[in-house]
Amino acid sequence: MAEQELITISEAAEILGVSIDTLRRWDKSGKLSPIKASDAGYRLYSRSQLELFLHDPFVLAKDWVLKGTEIPSGSYCSNSAVFQTRLTRMQDLLSDVSELIDIFPLIVAVAGEIGNNSFDHNLGNWPDTPGIFFAYDINKRSIVLADRGLGILTTLKRVKPELNNDEKALKVAFTEILSGRAPESRGNGLKFVRKIVAENPISLLFQTGNAELTLVKDSDVLDIKHSAEPFRGCLALITF
Amino acid sequence: MKIELKKFGTTLISRQNGREAFAAFQPQLTALGENENLELDFEGVITFSPSWGDEFLSPLSKKYDTRLILMNTSNLSVKATLELLEKINQMTFKIH
Image (cartoon, rainbow over all chains, first blue to last red; front, top):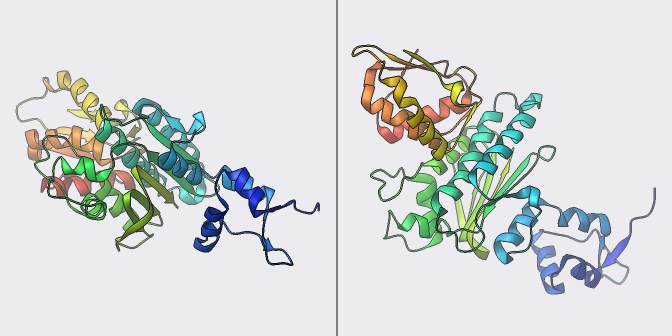
């Protein structure tokens, strides 16, 4: 087997378009760790590891919501009709996986609710790029959705003006059934997402503003914490 | 009167599509007798979500109450969606 091409931290920073300090932080947080240390103790990365990282849908989506970087056209749904078409395609692929035969409709419904939430609550109000990021890897059992919309707090404030931070907004979105929903219809879709995750082998990471929610499979515990990298829209990672 | 939901599609997920389906369905409803049941058959539906369901089922449930009967609801996304709609609308669907 050919020896892996090893790359120093400064070369890795250049390839990924981030600073060396960012790479050191990513190492500490576990987001991207070097594959080994040199004899002198310097961090060393492999080219294949960086390529994989660059093409990781979650990383691409996060960069898009944080910095507006370009995303592959295959992951961009400019409107809900495009999203519906691609979601149906994902449904077809998931239906072929024998161990998912019972729960794949739930996975599609969860992704559908999160994606459509983005369209429903930002229609006519997109701050810059309209539409959503939607990518999946059936082999890795993951789905990523993101938008550069107004975020949960701003859209939820229309019906609950007393909300004053992202963490509270996230909690309301995932737990409170809102009735008398004028002036806009809300599908209570995120409550559905929580219910599905609580009862099935599906997990979710959901970020909006400076709040981050983690829901783990087969559990109804709602873990909401402050996120170190705030952004305006929404970012979701579904694993199953 | 029996309606096959799969005629509206097998992936019934968005609020917008639910609204469109509900509007397209209205002319058919004029043929429903005064005491006749409205049966909605989920056979063939692959994915069903609360957004679509809220736009389509909630108004029908309000209008027809116990005359609305749902059939073939064993798909897990159908089951989960119906449970949530029941909670939101504080009602119980009649299921055959």
